[in-house]
Amino acid sequence: MIVEKDVNLDEMIKEIQTRFNIVGREVELRKCLAAKLAGKHLLLEGDVGVGKTTLAHALASYFSQNLERVDGDERYNASRLVGHFDPPMVMQKGYTWDSFVVGPLVSAMQNGAILFLNELNRMPEGTQNVLLSAMDEKQVIIPKLGVVKSKEGFYIISAMNPQEFVATTPLSEALKDRFAWVRLEYQSEEEEQAIVKIRSGLENEDVIRAVVRITRQTRNWPDLRRGSSIRGAIDYASLLRFMDTEQKESWIEAGVMALATKVELEDGIERRVEDVLTDIILEVLQDENFS
Image: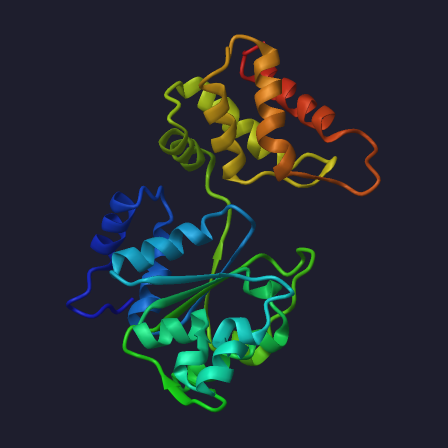
């Protein structure tokens, strides 16, 4: 790998990890930094809770840039992304900048900021394709106002869940062609333990190990279509700080509270989600000698 002489990616990675409490992710950070330094807009793909948003915020802060965040859904139309005219103001001042409500895309372009499009593939295709001219030509055309050119520093980071997720819209080939792509997988068990310790405030290593193992088990349990991300483990550990971990009931209560909203039952499973989670918790506790 050839790196510009004045750029030390290893030092940049270490600084980002230290400043923003990022555990691991050296490979992904190296790719993201290379894309940012090369001016190639970035598309992060991965399951819910793997840290896509964390990386986006860390990059923006590291490069001292403002971050304009957009959370996509099927109702997010192009006028919300670019901006729109306010009818009462148009009546008073006509089609001028004073009557235009600036959207996050135009705002990021005008200010040389980073536009973070969370869950890009939940936006309608028409909204997605508004990005093409901004990415290619660094400008957008606003009817009645003219051309908006981006200032230096304008950059797009998009995050998307895998396409098999419900309510996603496949990105057009034209749009995908303009991104550098980085996939984020779940991290190792040891790294997840370190993350939970940092973010939950729990110090007991044995409890943290069991919490992470329970959470990871939900990702492979046959009754569950979707398991929990690291967020579930963080919530679980945070709750256990205030419960008696010598009691199985505490583990079950905290586990159901933390994980029930983060997992999905397989189609056709008639059991309650709390019963499935209880089975997982008790199995791991037995293996971890908490029984």
